[in-house]
Length: 533
View 1 (cartoon, rainbow, N blue to C red):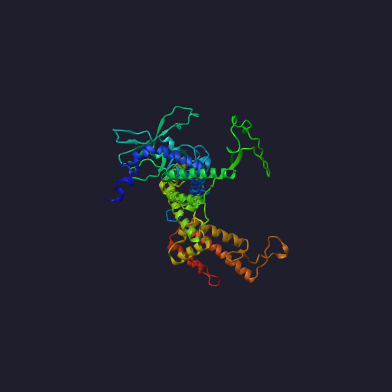
View 2 (tube, rainbow, N blue to C red):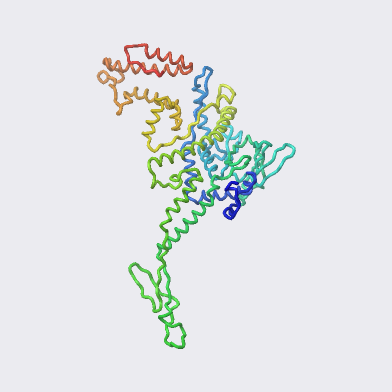
């Protein structure tokens, strides 16, 4: 028999292990878990930091970037169509176009996805076709509107409603039964409370599930809710005790040996203690107490020396339950080393990458498909054809991670590319960049620098010889010297080469390579332009 399955006095308090389906367990705990997680997100500084750091690292300040990759009939990138798609997607992501209330941009909705998944364990967004400039808008839905107490069975279709979600016999979501307003929004209740059945293709729903067959999601904070609450109570008690000790409180005691009680027949002149002590407290002054009274100072010894170690041990356990590093959760780098920081950042970044991948698949890709379809339908986006699926090809570029030592990681990336272990596209993707965009920007920089007489690539930009003019006559160049003429001619040849590169992008790779080699080797008297193999 397994030791973990034994029954006895040592396992008598193991009462949380029940033999039940996931929905049965979640059904009665979901509302309480979500409410307590939200309360900690409002009041607990560690949960607040966890929520904000997840949104900041997963989404970034500008949201996930998208680069269209639509190709033409000969296999090259269709630059005109891609430019139109990218410009329209940026406009669609503005707050006034993306959300139904006009207050949330696409990047803010992505942040809402991350925070909702981290606190509530669920994200619900309703699609509203026919609304907005691009033909569709989105409405962020509070999971409270999906009533977990609504459960029904439809014998005719075989569908059943589990905690507000209608599913078929395979568990696929068919519809969502949402309240028309928050059931506990009594102060602003303007209409009768009723449920609205919304088809599943009009809702983006995602949830954190831990068991097969689980319909609703639970908060990821569930394993640490109790520990966080206990730690918060302990910190508060230590803080109050330390504050009381800092105030140097005390009390007055009557010494029974100094005077007899009032009205003692054996001592007619006995002392009667006053009922009030006329005391005033001023810096550097002392008052005399009446006879029979003495002052006793209260010195609570808090916080104790074990306080920081106890808090650190508790937060490490909480950080493990949240799947983040202790240094990120507690904002504590007092004992961090370079290797420790790197290891911690790598582990945290794995969590961020997983959430980025999930957000792109569950939210961004459906939103982009809706944008292409409805923008083309309404005429906001002009496409060569109405085959919408052929225009959804794209790459997603979330924010990359800033490393502990950027120089070492850059050298490592360079070595990987040179040895063939990685491509430049992969290196750019790890940094949240698109390789095509980087190449085009570098080409534009080179062209702009040459036009302005600057040579790039040296430790300090070196200016080439500027054009000479006759006697100060504006706009009339003088005959250049031999070296200046060679430089200008070579720059002209580079411009021609760049133009040929752009023109050849629509042709297969082999034809492009042969044409570029022929262009580079056409004149042996000039420096040859290196051609990538």
